Length: 386
Image (cartoon, rainbow, N blue to C red; front, side, top):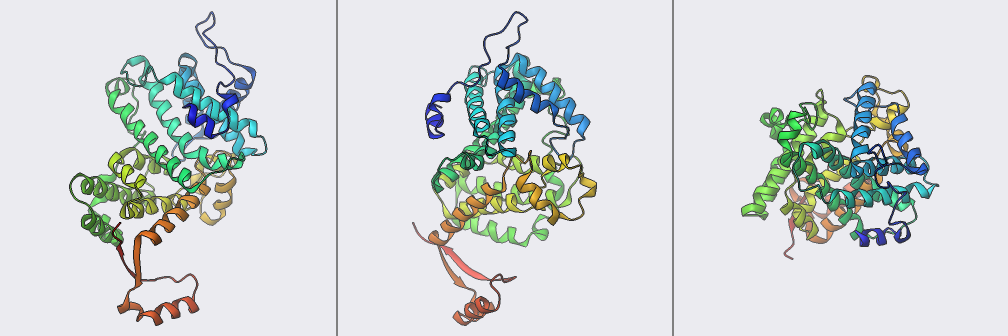
């Protein structure tokens, strides 16, 4: 944790505006800077997700803050997101970024004694903490660049893998606290919905490329690796299908985050080892992030009074997605990852044009001269032996 703080350049800010020991009423007092962040968190008149109305979102935030007063790790997490959002709005004010980083470190420190326990008292705040910490892990890296920190390509991918592990933490918390969460009515059918079974019968016909990708996976892996990667690919395309269909109670942000919750650690390990076929799957996920029709910035749009039933022209939403105040998951992250994935694919694969469709080298020449962005470019490829 200290090393993480040092990498962010905040050694002198390892302790945020403190949430000191409890006062006479049993609630932790807040410093002035923290009160500003809390006020910002509560005043936003918008739903967190597009399948939630503003009133429900406001009521949910009130409940979260009430829990946070009794659980400092949740309060620090809320304040870290509030500060990160303010920094997204005003990137010239770097103090917001440092507040966000410090509160995130404090949240991780406070939660340690409770994260492995299953109890009625901590089940709900731990569930909210895990979801918010996962959001922070996705949102912070691109904003870190705006704070003036340099970052290597390796750092970018490591940040993504860390975010994936944080996403898996949501499922771990839900599993260990399932009894208490159900007793409290959370999560219910509207939280982290999973209706992937409903799209499975037509998945391969809807996405012919799925069969090609699965064949590549089956030819590359065996044993547990094959099972884990196969399941991840199928679930990813199922998520894509749900995003296209836009069923009720399916927020785009939640759906994209849901996939990371179920990614097996063995696949994350393959990514970290830069296994080429595994990187193809990562590329599909990066494309899912960068596609504006797949991930609509409901948080920023709500501030502009644009609601789901009025979104007739998706192209008009791209600028809002890039600049919106509550668009925690930034497009820049996807573009950075995708460039790295493409570089890895070039290095680890042998490429050639499909001779039947392009007529050898002349086919490549015709494609390049006629259209720099061709609609179809069929290629043959195989992984190189490492």
